[in-house]
Image 1: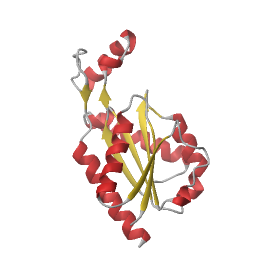
Image 2 (image 1 turned 90 degrees about the horizontal axis):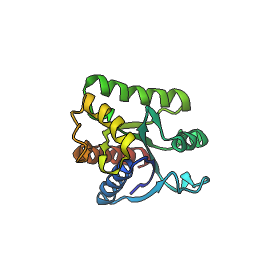
Image 3 (image 1 turned 45 degrees about the horizontal axis):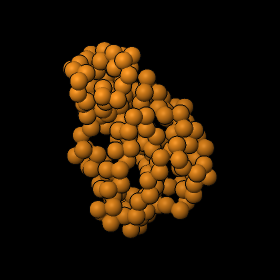
Image 4 (image 1 turned 180 degrees about the horizontal axis):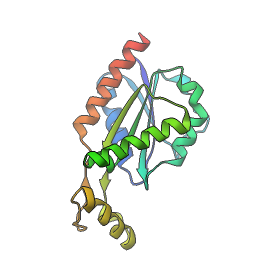
Amino acid sequence: MPSFLIVYGTGEGQTAKVARQLGETLSELGHAVRIEDIDEIDADVGLGDHDALLIGSSIHAGRHHGKVIDFIEMHVDELATMPNGFFQVSLSSAGDDVARATAAGYIDSLIERTKWTPDRIGQFGGALRYSEYGFLKRAMMRRLGGRSLDATDTTRDYEYTDWDEVRTFAEDFASFVTQRVS
């Protein structure tokens, strides 16, 4: 069975939750999985020790996690030699058609900047964690969340990740990788 490396960058923890669910689904399918937070990973991690790679990033203020971009740019040649995928976690992915088009634009920008075209791409809704925000961030996020997600009650948190969609993405990616490395 193919082995998978999942590398992710998160701002508030939702991308880490998605990475763990992807890893759990792949493990349930019988694959070996290693999950690494970009803030803790060894810069010269051996990608060749794995059959496939998934890279994930949160979106904050319209930008991917900086260290994820750096990781991709550092390993872009190696990525071309193995099955790979990218997943993005953002509030825009949970919004209306205009918001989802914005989320797709973030991926287009990533591809243009890094010169990496992932084999598979997943876009998942993020979360609003009002309980963890200070006054200013709570007010700013209330404006953003209220605009497209009707999430203006700052006394509670909101999670927009479709976990069935995450599991389906992992299953589809596993099938793709198995076909490629068999």
